[in-house]
Length: 132
View 1: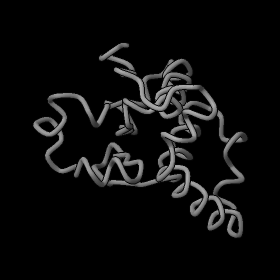
View 2 (view 1 turned 135 degrees about the vertical axis):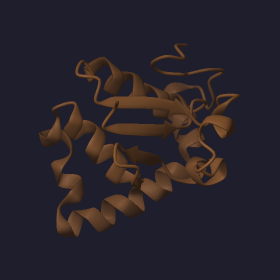
View 3 (view 1 turned 90 degrees about the vertical axis):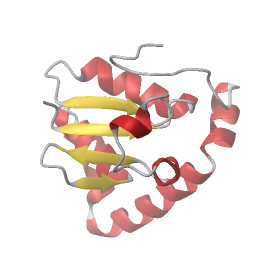
View 4 (view 1 turned 120 degrees about the vertical axis):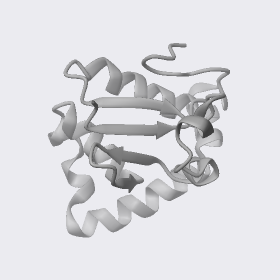
């Protein structure tokens, strides 16, 4: 069983790119990836509100606890051994700024994806068991 399940937007090119990168580092299998737009998502995860998971990144720890936003990102990168890459995100003063910045990114991720990748949506950017 994974230590963290990440519920990500499989239609967002930037989100999917980060999940692919995390998956490439996930050799110990500590992470599981679930596309919130998979056709069977609601049936498999009735406790996750899809519209809320679209608004802010959701994660579920192995003990069932839900975590959100950059707490998911931080935990994911720590679990793949890259704590030094993300440690600053949880420093006391930086944490608030980073969380507000994340909410801005989440709200505008399709526009930001279009500006950075030329693509605002991707047909299917599933990770792990549901490969592209």
